[in-house]
Image (cartoon, rainbow, N blue to C red; front, side):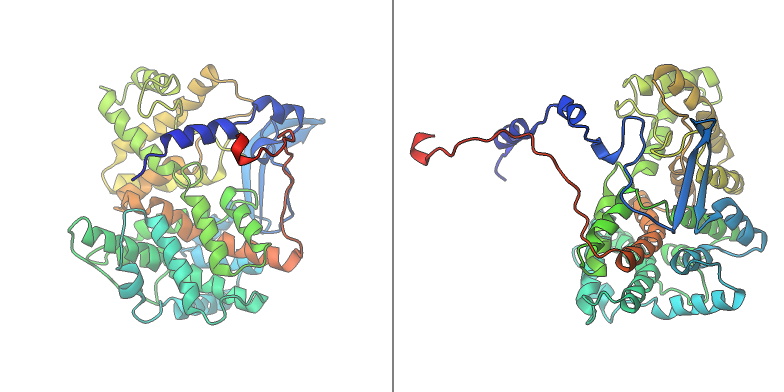
Length: 445
């Protein structure tokens, strides 16, 4: 392949913009101001995130609250957990249709999802089994775009048709992800090939475990915590990168499959969807580097090395700590941790859970000592999710696709909201800082 290094250097030089120009021109880089507040780009009814309160006119950090359609996610999860129900389908109904379903509506909705949970004839053979690769997010994108080619109404953006397309994608995302991994694992890792059909009587979480495992077996606590992970990753406001991508692309009037493929491309980026993989890798490196993982002083010293770019990937980060929006706490992490302890105990991983628990407690102190923090810092939902996926036997190649299997519900809800409420293409302004120049004839250059 031709070496583009020299051209890349030229490209980097000509395109570099003086950071001071962003300040002078009052441009909010990343659509966030210097205090981390997002620039308002739209309105939504789908979810609400609270991380600060106004106390006597002062913006004050507070414990994080996440609401789905106005309902506190902690109350929502307590509702289905206390009733011994899995919550994915119930929560999907809430996000799509605005209200919690009655038991009869929930039963009908589960039946509807089961009915559309099927791929076109020979799709697994002709699409998923061909050119398998380790990058499952690219596999997902390819599969989604190919599904569009099978849809005679792919370009119909009427609300009934878009809703039908969203329900299809919500239903088949687990199949696309798990079958994609099974194909890769077979053809590239020389393992046995398992293509288990989903059971229409089972939930999304149960079917994921059933399709992933050779013997199709799983325990109740395994299904419950995977279901909880899907619920907690399902939606997070219109401003996260992949959901905003869904809004932007949908505003152009394009089809559902293209909009969701764009969202998948966003989620694939390590700054968005890969944090839990980094947490697992960071902890594995810590286990090799720290002689006594029960010694708080040793663990603290290693965390300092992480921030000083002397350990792990030398990026100066403690992965899984902090969030773009939350300050004192991430409510999703608080919920997830309760069941992580239970699962770790069942799986004989209590010692590693204790290490995670220690890092969660010490890291904010270390970060506070080493960094200038304008708001609180705490564990985010990704801090524990990778650990949970690992002890569930979910391979790292599927960590980000698990995020997508959940977030497709939020993307679908936001696509519908965009199409219903907006009639203008989203087009923010970019200010040029390039001075005018004269054209020079080729012979004089």
